[in-house]
Amino acid sequence: MSATDRPRILVGPFLEPQWSEYMGQAFDDFDTLTFGAWEGSDLRTGLNPVLNDILAVLPEGWTPDLFVLWRPEYGTIPRGLEDAPFPTSAWISDWYLAFSDCLEAAWRVDTLVTGTRGERIYRAAGFDHVIALPMLGYDPRLDGQFGLPHAERDIDVYCGSNPNWKVHAERARVHERMRQLPDSVNLIEGGFVDREEFNRRMGRARIFVNQTVIGEINMKVYEATASGTCLFVEDTNLDIRDYLTDGESVVLFNRDNINGKLLYYLEHEDERARIADAGRERMKPYTYRTNARTIVERLLARGLRSGGRPIVELSARERLEGLAGFGLRHNGGDWLALLPLCAELGPEPRPQLILACAQYAARVLTRAPGVWSDPQILRAFAAVANAAPHYLPAWYCWTKIAVEHLEPGTGARALERTEEMLRSGCPVPFSMADPYLAMEQNRRFIFERTAWEALEAGKSIDDALRPLLLEELVEVRAKLTARS
Image (cartoon, rainbow, N blue to C red; front, side):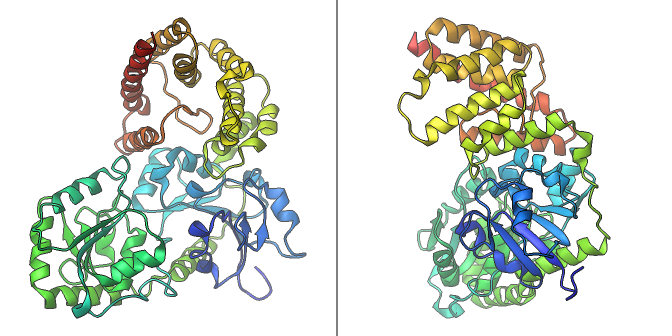
């Protein structure tokens, strides 16, 4: 511990203002240094930092008591993190958006902090170094600053949430049900707006409907209560009753009763206002700063020691493959920087596939013309598929490329081989080192959700994912037929 008795926290990576600016103040109670590509970071380390490079720019004599890998689902994993000489932790809230990314992070830290459902699923995946603690909160500098008096609010019901039904299927169903409300109800549905506009809308809303994705206390619980709106949350939420009481400080609903409850509380203004005021008072202590302090104190009280990382179970090669796959797939990574990393992995099929995908991605990102006219890329994909006759990701990627970019006979042979592998019951690898890079983003959301739901239910990931890939190959065959 530092001489000032304020724990020294090294936290990052912070990449962009929308993921960083309003969360950086969570660590103001500590002697904190942030790192990342965001210009507001204390240590500017670029998009794809290496741990030793971060340590090299620390102030002389400053050694962290705890490293916080902050929400790797939106960032990157510093290369070499698994060898850090001090305790490390990963704080993961939205793991469902990048589940395989977050599994890769879990291997590399001493402690994983997530939510209630996340803890359950990570334990099912074999990780026992995980704890459930709330890490989000609200920022009193912004959240709640635009709340109008109850009598002046002019939006009856606000549903300002991510509308992507591939990720938020139940939310989309609830929204569809609410569209059956009478025309006299001023219902506002919103996609993405900036945080200030989001707060202004909540400050005008009498009721805010929050159908969460995984039954968690999500950010909107904190933000909505801070705004003084009456919060509605699904009645299957795993954690809400630990904070708020139905009918007193929150209204719990389901798809069948949502409209009846909305109409009731819109007609009973005094009851609605009392619930809103009680919710605001009850959630007032839970700022980002307060929740971060609770987590750090809890972790340090456990007497953390470095080296209790599951990564020790993996070979050096598996470690490198996983990190290469993570960086390749993640939207915040430096794709070109992966090429020398892939070169370290040698000529084996899996690294070849990663290298080929990195070359492809680099060309796409630089918008170079004629991506698929480059024979080097095509040869790399073809070589890895033929060199790995039982490795499904290689054949999956090669099939989609061959069907779309080569003569029909080549595409047909690759498609038949991939379909045969799937129907014969081959393994369906699911990790960062097995990138299904040719998968469209929304399909990837479904793919990853299916994987964690299978884990949660104690079922085989292979059996759960195989039908999804076969279903996609039906579409691939249709493309082949159209080209023929």
